[in-house]
Image (cartoon, rainbow, N blue to C red; front, side, top):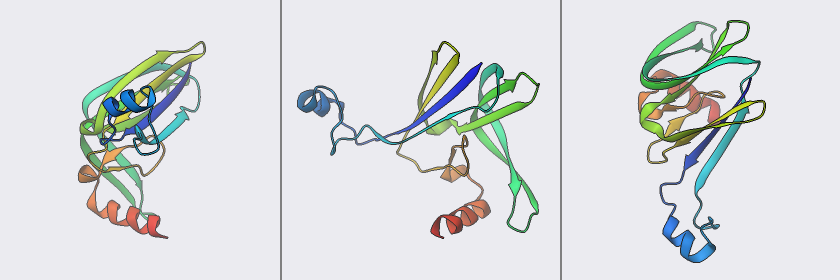
Length: 150
C-alpha cells in the first residue's frame, strides 16, 4: 500500500475563538494555525504499518570525517513501515513533541497525520525524523547548526 505522512507544527499562539469570530473559523495572516507542514510518501510498497509508542530510536549516521555514530534516543514514537520485500522504514518522533495523530484510509493506501507542538524546538535532520532539541545529541546539534549557517 502507499503510505503518506503529513507532519504539521501547530502554532501555540493560534486562537480558534478569534478565528471563529473574525474569519468563519479559518486562520488569518496574523492568526496562523500551522507554522510549517511536511508531507512525503514512504518509498516503496508498505505491507504493514505500525505505531510503536514509548520506545527508543537509534539515530545512526556518519560524521563529516566518515566515522560512524549511533545514539540511543529515548521517549520516542516510531512509525514502522514494513515493506513488501521485508525491509523496514522507521519514522521517529519525540513522544513529548506530539500534539495528536490521526489516520485516514485512501483508495491506494493511507495517510498518517502528525501534529507537533510548537512550545519546544524540534530538530529535523532528515526527512521523517523529528526529535526534540533537548533530546538530540549535543555534538550532532553543533554539526547540524554549523550546516544550517552555511
